[in-house]
Length: 324
Ligand SMILES: Nc1nc2c(c(=O)[nH]1)N[C@H]1C(S)=C(S)[C@@H](COP(=O)(O)O)O[C@H]1N2
Ligand SMILES: [Mo]
Image (cartoon, rainbow, N blue to C red; front, side):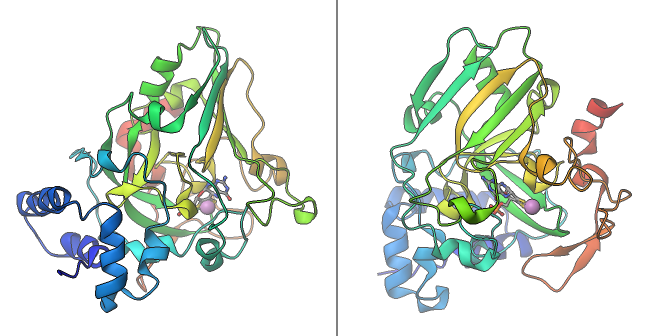
């Protein structure tokens, strides 16, 4: 039985100048063999000690209903200026306050979190409000992979291959009316499944976020359903989350249950908690320090590096026009 070192290969393929065609051929081969599916994790856990005995639990804790859609075709216009973050590093360092405020504990606390079946409600200023099953929803769209930088407001960053579809596609599908000027996202509320969603947590759950409609329609705004060529593991916000690579990470809510189109600007979770520290826009800006720390540089996860932070996290060519 071959041993598959998947998380290693992700790192290596971007460090080595592996030709794209060779890489894609390998992925296609793995897909045909069925080992990019559920069994890959069994194989990795059972026969590949180099990935560690917990590899499957770290990176393979996801719903299987849409597994056949992976890996998706890569959108070549999203290129990185740095290597991809190691898959296990990204999977074990998470901001997901519903579970824990301690980043390296989140992945251990998500077992009870039920992400299948999952429904999403789309309502507000739409022709017809509806609640749809996640698997059916995803199958309406064409998934693509984008290699993106991710910059947390806490001044750490990673670079990961997200899989998903443009938020603009969902807006079009939703039948949004012309009076909508904002979109509001709401995460899940399951205190029995998420240990920090209890009364005493001090937070106002569920997590809620929002965007202007012109931001939501920008091509960089992405509905994410997968990472590293498979569905999102629970700790990354299964089964669907928003990714806005030009904004700080907190603007992209995980595990979304409701999407509401509104005329008024919706309140947002971190802005309500500390308005002087977290604005509604949350755009990455190295020249605008957080009240308690500089945003000029960022710590690159999984490396010892600290690198300069770029305006709009390097996505200015796509989004700067939104803020003139
Ligand atoms: N529901 C929810 N979404 C969330 C958060 C959260 O605590 N709860 N944290 C945000 C922050 S601050 C960041 S940096 C990213 C982290 O995503 P990752 O753990 O997949 O890297 O998720 C964002 N989305
Ligand atoms: Mo963050």
